[in-house]
Image (cartoon, rainbow, N blue to C red):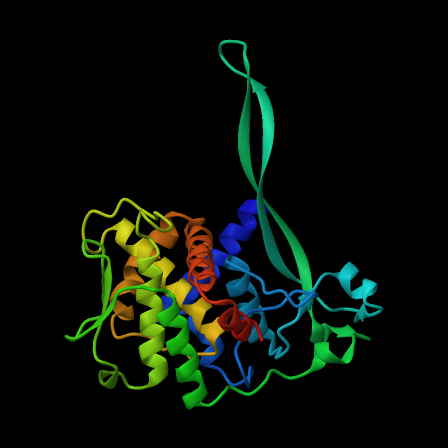
Length: 299
């Protein structure tokens, strides 16, 4: 089952990329999820993280579900509800480690940490009858540009990152540890500016004084470069969902698609790893926020 889920998720993303589509941008480019795009939510209102965000966004798009709430068969029962007969669940994964004691070559016992991946099925609230009313409420409309811009400005300022403006390129410089952005006025929309900034600040988290993320990158376009760009792409998508921003495909995505395809085809676990790194980056940036801003994001 573990290998099946790696293959299933990766093959879906590869199919999208081969069509020129970015799986993580699709929720914003369709009309069956009207209103504010949010991360998928558990039965208790807490958001799903990492690869499960992509898996459930994709499931919602394929089925037309607009509710962000997902839960297991048992969780629905505990809420006094029931899954409708004939409904099919969608897989999510749970990653953890376990410790096993083994005898070493010298006869001494040693502990080994073994990672494992568990899969289980969840159902959307629209597949369930009898839930409390708030599970069926439609997503709130997207907030207007003035509010969204102010909120995003506060979020990115609170990171304390060295963000400079000028030139025509957006990039993170590891040597000087700063994010370079074109002037705000150069972007097609406020959302495009903030989505790009979210991408570059995800790169910013890889610094050794922060998350110390390294994929062995040696030159532009190599496998390490492609992996880091995939992390930044997913990190930006997660942050945009948290901030109610609408990300847009950048002009350089076409060039990246081929390198992402190569990595994903060679390693079925690559997107799972990238999503985990992206989640840590988003958590790190969210963790830099004053409490008031964090509460505003969660609302």
